[in-house]
Image (tube, rainbow, N blue to C red):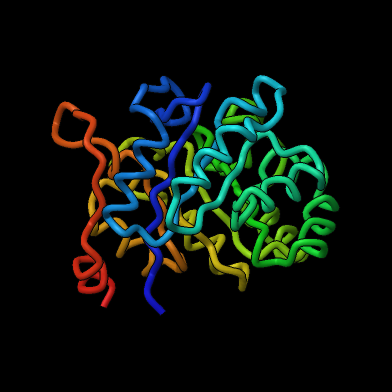
Length: 251
C-alpha cells in the first residue's frame, strides 16, 4: 500500500491561511481555487481544518463545506467546530469522507466512541495537537493550541484507539509551519503505542521529511507550508510532488 501524502489546508473566516506554530495566520487565497489546483495535480486526499471555529465557539460553515464538496474530485476530511452527532451526519451527507475531532474528543471521549459506532471507525479521525515544554515534556493542547490539557499524547492516543476511532492526525505545534521536519520522537512514541494508522503532521519542508516520518512509524504524512509556499521568501505557490517522486522515495 502506498504511503498517503496529504495536503493539510487551514481555513479561517472562509479563507485559506497558513500558520507557524499555530500562530500568525497568513492569507494564502481562496480554498476553492486551491481545491481546483489540487484536482489538476491528482492529489489522492485532502484535509481541511477550520482553525478558528472552536476558538470563536461558533459552528461549522456548512455552506463552505458544500462548495468544497462540489469542486473536490478527491476524498477529503474536515475538522473544526464539530459539536454534535448531527453535525457529523450533516457533514457526511454533504460529501465529507472523514470527520476530524479535536477539542470535543478531549472533553468527551465517549463522543468519539458514539461517532465511531454510528458512522464507522473508518470515518472518524481524532487529531492530537502536541507541544513540548522547556524540559521537552509533551502535552496535548486543544482550541487551536490555546488550551493546555493534562493529557500526554501517548496516553490520549491509547484512549482514542480504545474509543474506536480509525486514525490519528498527530500534529506537533512546535514544528508546524517551520519547514524543519516533523517531531520524529513524538511520531515514534505515538505510532509505537497504537495499532491504528497515525498521520504525521507539522513541519515537513522537503520530501525527505516524509521518509523520516514513515521510518518512525507514521502510516501517512500530511503537510501544509510545503504545498503552499515556494522559495526562501515563501511566495504563495500551490504545488504537490509527482506520484513517481513519492513512490521512489518511499521505496
